[in-house]
Image (cartoon, rainbow, N blue to C red; front, top):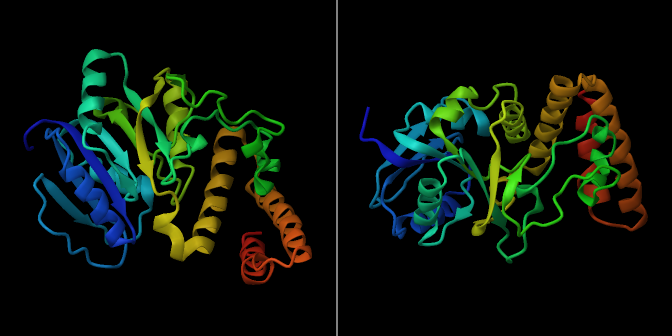
Length: 294
């Protein structure tokens, strides 16, 4: 065991080395120094990281484990009192880590922090403050109606208000290590996506609340790390969605897939009528992949 630290920043990495480097550079200028960084290389390429002025461990996966499983692996190498579970497409400000350390020191009842996530253009990522999906919301998921709170409320109405919430988004989340271990980390059921919703739901049912903090925004370059694998990522999300609704609501996986197929056919027809490129370049391949799951 190494020296006990305040934070262990754990970053699963799949692709986009330049994006990861920019994140590490933003960490390096932090005024707060009581942390370590653990990068879990979950991709094929070899990482050639420059030397940074902070403790840095690079762990290579033999297989592509996915986000949640890689985070679980990173925790086994960690020495921090608190874990920062992080995507690789993040940019920190100089005082972010110090601000969160002060918040945790002054509020010992807080065990999980979900900061407000902001896109590169400054807009708010509403998924950083949301309710859990409802049992029948899988029916509207394919056409994204849940994003409009139709017919189930999915997002909180006041994204700039600090409060305890049901669910966050583990693109950048702080969890007390003892709590993470008590929750047995992320479920190994998921490869890509939904592992964070599953994690927050476990915490919620064990009465471990998530504190949503809007005072210290975190910049998330959402989608940058999956630009080259969108089809694979979307199929991975669908598979994880079937697992989630089966696990928590006992909805048959095939029913979730059929719902996705029906919604995708609707979107394909709409894009075809509007003569959009997606109708020719994406939806035929995506629908074929969906049919392969039935």
